[in-house]
Image (cartoon, rainbow, N blue to C red; front, side, top):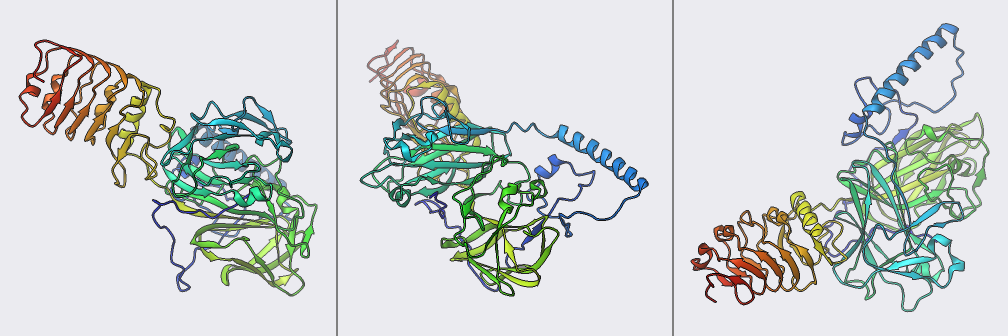
Length: 587
């Protein structure tokens, strides 16, 4: 069965759990029905830039059919208003950035495109990742063709191996990696998932492998730039084998979906997405643009089905209409009590969304909703048009009970639900430092496989050879790229890493000149020996008063060594052998 795990903390993740206090006011549960018309002064672009977009209308606005008969004048007025609204909507849409709809279905380790049982095309992942080796699974009979291969990465503690994916800035994305190791002994490796600079969760597929099943994990992240990195991290505290992945889906969400979460500060990890009343396996719907998976809930006693259609567009989260075709219904005059999600949760904040639609056409029922004996929503009246109730930061801990208590009409029911864990974003490397490292990387060849993703974050997963401080916005303080087999040239952008204290590119095959490093006022060590650097030694090195070690021997440098370096009494230097200096400096 697919796995919907709790988020497990890595060794460097700071605690984020909230204290469960029965006396504190819990997050309000919001009723979602069709959104009201926006004021003319508020554009979609302005709403997108609001930290917390309005998640629900201030008044109840049911998704129901209106029985009022309109006169001809009223109809003409309505048509005029509709035309005006369409004009305003078109103007607002033109002002918004383009919605490119980035959508990735990557078949990891595959050499060519594959098509799954639903007719979806999966692309090979080689164009989005460096490193790792493809592996063909022997037991393909258990798998969809898109999961018949996997990509295996080496066990190199502290390294992260990243997929780099172009995205639209400030949009939100659903990420769903899938893992199936195949029959194995010893058990499959355990490793970390990282998005940009944020630790997401630890992947442990052991139980699913024993059951012959694949595991999937799912989260929603906001895009802060033009690229998003999805990484697999080798945590030395887990196992002694490297990470692997079979498939990766990255799906751009509509602006309305899960829009009550502030994705500039948090991300959401899926705990459970359930279709109540279903007796089938995991369900996916062709009309769901976001290809969400809905798990069945094991309760056939209270299961019912219906044939009426609910309009998905009436819901901000755009659930597929098919999830409303089944429900769990309480017995007459009795509450419906569910243990859901089916796993214990760590004490923390969660996003909870519940979906309801009466299975009887032109009918309604009213009931109260409780979660763990706290009132989630009182006096909820459900019709066949459907509605959703959600809370953005509801405190849960341990096993959770959802209770639907009858008030009037038919017995309570529930059709579907989603629970996400909320966790804070882990931060990013100081932007100027990150851009400088990317420029340095472009000037080099034979770079390490893990020079992707955020250079410093999360803590413990910096690029090979890069050392960062522990500040809230990390700075790069040391580059130790000695004996890495690098070639290429040393980019002048290295001078933008103004927090550097140590630089070593010793024993590589770098060519070209030594750039101006005078901006590096904290630099104490510069080791460039045993390369193929040419040109002269910059006189600007002599104005770095903090410099204590300068090793340039065994290069192809010429000219004269600047006098301000030779007269620096606090400097230990070595210029010879291997350079063509004149006059020859002292050894």
